[in-house]
Image 1 (tube, one colour):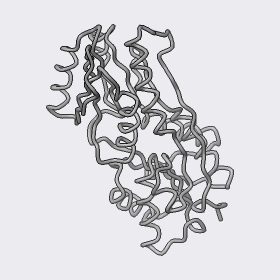
Image 2 (tube, one colour):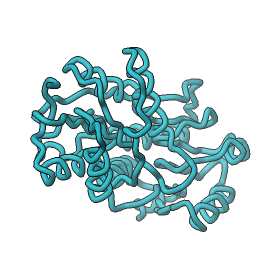
Image 3 (cartoon, one colour):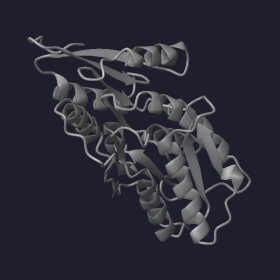
Image 4 (cartoon, one colour):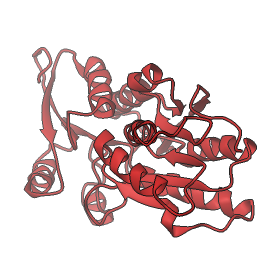
Length: 282
């Protein structure tokens, strides 16, 4: 991927964990539209938690501190790595560093909106389907969403049943499998809050495969509001994914223009979208 070449070129490393998910491809497209201009040469890096991560780190160290930059989408930088890159033109999306400008959403508030909705409907036995990265590292957003789940239940005096919390990769098949485990408990949940729409859609399919009525037997809430959520009429938390990409790219361009702000944490709002998969608890 590259922009049109002008007299002076800046190299931008645009890194993200994968391309085959709606969230990442949407952010990537929005960021690229902002960055596609004269003099910018964009290098795309798809980074998992293996050797690609070390290769990306080595590449970041070679960036020219004045002319080059990087936009890291849900790519974790350790505090040590962030300090070594301090002063470079780096912007992160979805991860906070305390060193570089970061664009995130209010994950904890978004999860709280979902939980408050279910609690207002009278649900007390609420399961949490969280995202697992397949590594020991818990992402910033996953930690915030699970923390909100625990906090809201505790504030209502509801004991947290560890059997109602499952972490799985963010795919529909994993959501089907995990929800099958939840619905097979001796005391199944009356509601499920999933940390992403893929897991929620899997839970929706699992419930229907088991003959459960959604929402009469079980309510389900997701997080993202991707197009598939609209098609499934899923109640979910909407996040401005396009704006995450645009804002991250704009912040990087601001750094190139010499505009550095003391504000590092740029938090975008979210909203609850109520559809047909939630109803009062029986």
